[in-house]
Amino acid sequence: MGPPVELAMLQTDNIDEPFHSTYTLNSPMYKSMQKQWTQGLKRAFNRLPRFDWEKPER
Figure 1 (cartoon, rainbow, N blue to C red):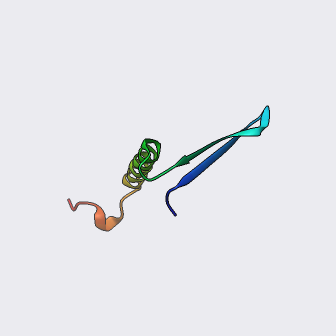
Figure 2: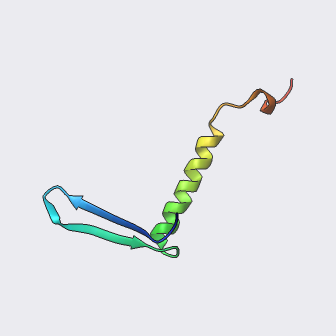
Figure 3: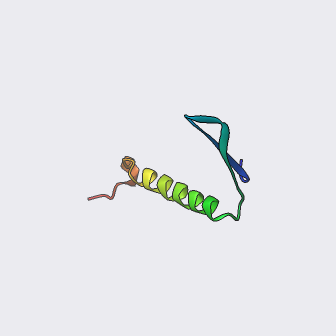
């Protein structure tokens, strides 16, 4: 899956007029979300414990 990404949010007091936005591949918001998602995944994987075969020998 990929762009365009559509976002709709309902407010508690106003369900008749949802906030709606569409983000394309070139939109600044989509690029920012993509960058932060990628960085977050890299951080998560780098924090996982290492397998024995990954640890340096002493």
